[in-house]
Structure formats: structure tokens, C-alpha cells
Length: 436
Figure 1 (spheres, one colour):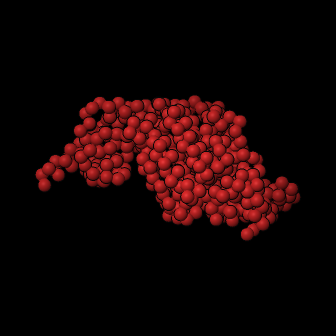
Figure 2: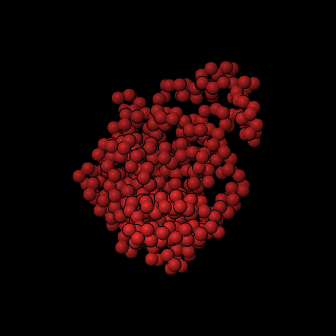
Figure 3: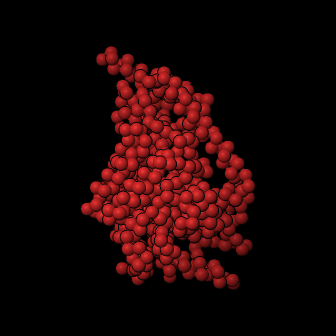
């Protein structure tokens, strides 16, 4: 094993042996090189005042070489802020700005010890990093039965972990904390579990309320007290889009120091929060018991980044930083929030009208981009195909009964027509079925 990896492992084992035990084989082997090209280039950038012949970029007239046809489009920005490589952990100013935003929006973090956010190539990359660091063959990854299908690729296909499902809702149509607890305690013989908490949930648009949040934390703490090391990933892709009856901050703050056997990891980003899907700017943030532990986790994370993408795109990091520092940022973001909330509320009022009750019910939703219909009479895939082929309407079929509708991308004035077309399609399929 590389001496740097061994040193990081010794730090983790000394600071919190449970966190060391959470690491996958790759997680234990990975390190960020201190004597490679990047570290030597960083040293040269600070000290080489005459000539810096270290890094693989081109310089012209004292600034990064660039094409005028590109710079004309980006003339607001200095070439040094868009053309150079960003550091593996991300643009330092952006990391600081995102941390400040995170603390403001998640008061429950308070004075708890958290690391500096590490920039990722959006949230899927952040989840992939977590999978590399913590998931080994046969490890259990606990997620609800209503989930984003990419978790299977990320944890099960790539890393050989085993997906363990529990029902998202209980009989009262609230978050099923008892189901989470049961799934966790079933891992006692393994001594380790990875939990993914995705709120607002994709595909249902559900976020727990305050009491449910406490129940989730209690279930995770119970597992830790039973001797299970728990890595909790809060997939906060849709963070901030909380509309009614839900928590208005991430569970990361509640879980940050809940137990020495619990490692809380916040995975979030500008993708949905700031409506910049194509920018691919995300973050990974760790909670821990000491600065040394957080530093070791950061070094291992940087090692994964160096070994895969080397570093994230610099221009989009600069664009996001510019937005965060703009005095108009909060006002403009609030304006978009009100539009999204209006679409969610309009969707709910349409569904609550009663005129569709013979065709479907719907799962509770109070946040995010989506909601899910629970069909009563037709197959979800058959309905999806019929809507697409006969009416030019796109939806997502999930299993036999569930149809996901993204109200986020439908103007509020068009929502009623959308659901009327879905209902019309249900009736058309029923008619065809009855005639056979």
C-alpha cells in the first residue's frame, strides 16, 4: 500500500476507527499524491515568478491562451477564471461561498464540525465518489422503494453492493421510519450499512416533516447503538424546493454528530438549486469528530477525483461563484421558487378536484420537481406509450402502477390540460381493453 494511503488510514483509525471500517477496499487504498504533477505545479504557481513550465496549459501575453471566438462569448470573465484547470477539490472561492450558503440555509448544522465542500462534476459524480470510498461487494445500500434508478447503477452495478429496499410511505402515508429502522437492523451481522436519503424525493416529490425527520435520525442512531457503522448520504439534489408541510433544511445537520458510528455526507449542488443543469457543479461535504478526520476524508476524495476526472470544469464553477456573490441572487432565486411552488400547488388542486378519482390516486408530495400518480385501472407503461404516441405527451412509467409527472417543466396554465390528456388516455386504453 502507498505510504500516503497508509498515513491517511492511520489518521482515520486514530480519529474514529468506525469511519475507517466504513471504507471500501478502494477507499482504503486511495490517496491524493503529494509529489505528483499537481502538487509540484501548485508549488510552482506560488513561487515560480520568472517562468512556470510545469502545467499542461498554454500561455500567451501573460494569460491563458484562448480563441477569440470563445472569449467573445465569455467576455465578462477574465481568462484566468475560465481557461485554467480548476484545483481537484474545486475553486477555493466557490467552496467557501457554498459553505457559507449551506450554513445559512441549514441552521441545525450550527457549530457542528463539517468539512469544506469539495466540488464534484454534479451530484451523480458525488454519489459515485461516495460509492467508491464506502461500498464494497456485498455491502448493503438502503433506499426506499420509490427511488432514482441511477442508484442501482452507481452502487450495485459499479461497486457490487446490494440494494435493500423498504416502503417509502407507512400506512398513514408518512415517511416509513419504522421500515428504515428494520432494514438497518437487518444488517447487524454485516456491521455496516449505507443509507441514501433523497429529499425532496425523486420520483414522488415527498419530503418528511419535522417529526418524521426526528424519527429518521432516531432510526439511524438506533442502528449505530446496535453496533452498525452507518454511512448516511443525504442526496440533496432538489434542496430548497420545500413547499408545505416539510422540513426546510437537509437532514445532514441533524445527523452530523448523532453518533460516532454514523458518518454523515451531504451531496448537493447548483444543478437544480440554481437551475443550471448543464453546468455540472456539485459538492460533497463531510461531517466528523475532528479536523484531522475531515482532512483525511478530503484527501481520499481528491484521490478519487484525480483518478477519474482530474478536476471539474472551471468555467461553470466561475459562473456559479459569480451568481452566489451577486446582490440579485437571492431575489431572483426566490422568484423562481414562487413559480415552482405555484406549479406544485396548482397540480395538487387539479388532482384534488375529484374528477380523476376513478383513474388514479397520487402519492403525497410537498416539494421538488415531481409527483407520482398511482394508477387504478391501466398499466403504467401502456399509458406512457399511449400518451407519447397518441397525444405527444411524455411521462415516466415506474413499475406497473406508478406514473411520474414532472410539474417542474410544465407552465402552470398548461397543467390542467396535461392531466386531462392523461385521464383521456386512461379512458381510451380502458375502451380498447373492454372491446377485446
